[in-house]
Image (tube, rainbow, N blue to C red; front, side, top):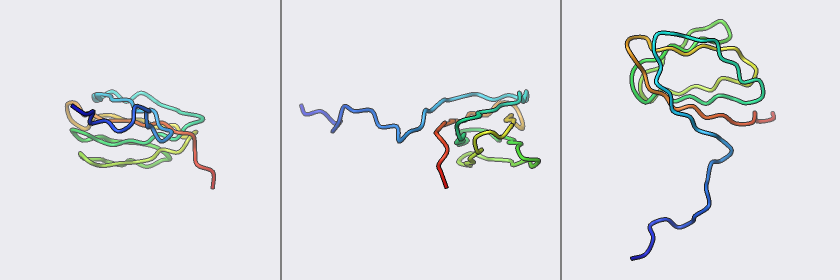
Length: 91
């Protein structure tokens, strides 16, 4: 039977992915040299950075630019997210 995978090379498009389960605890985070790409998989997440709070539901996405202090926490119970980290795009 032929392989369903057309290439054995890993494709990441320059991002490293990390899965996390969040609780109500919101530790301060900082990625000084990488943008943080965030997507909510399950639950509701409060993202705070640059003086604003953003509430994200499943499917919600955000980008926190490199060098910005931020916090992430579940609004109620637990929330599951996937985070990607990439070198900032030059403008």
